[in-house]
Amino acid sequence: MTLERTIASAFDMKDETWQRHASPWSVWTRFSVLPLLILAFWSRIWLGWGSLIPIAMAVGWMWYNPRIFNKPTSTNNWASKAVLGERVWLNRDQIPVPPHHRYLPNILSGVAASGIIFVILGVITLKIWPTFLGIILLNLSKLWFIDRMVWLYEDMKDQVPEYKQWLY
Image (cartoon, rainbow, N blue to C red):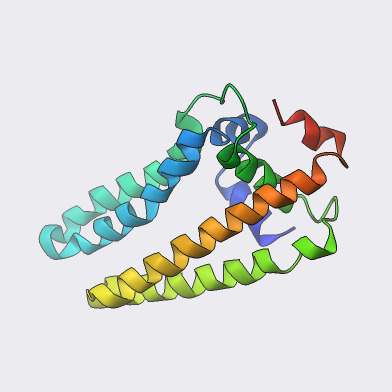
């Protein structure tokens, strides 16, 4: 089982949830999760133990986001195809992806992981520059990753009938 599939299982991502997450509203509002988490953890300097409330709310938003929006009326758009590509990527241990799609997503995930380290360092030390550097690394690598997922989906949709059915 891939790391990504483990994470998707932890978030209880079932078919219905994936369909809702394919809404462009879900994709774009998902980018609010990181700033909200950072702000919630940073709030410990103002709220003390009361910061657990905004932290819980930010984590709740992260879990609830793929579920809150309706299924899109069409998945024939960049944001929806990004989610469909993520599903293809998650399934790569069952249905292999073409060789030219196998490496860069892992590299981009590594860049995102380095961003997480900077964010954690910045939040712990209450320093702006590592926090913002981490946000930039995470968001740029995530945008590039999801753009690659669009490309992956476009390459795979005609090869796997199930994948083609996701496009409407």
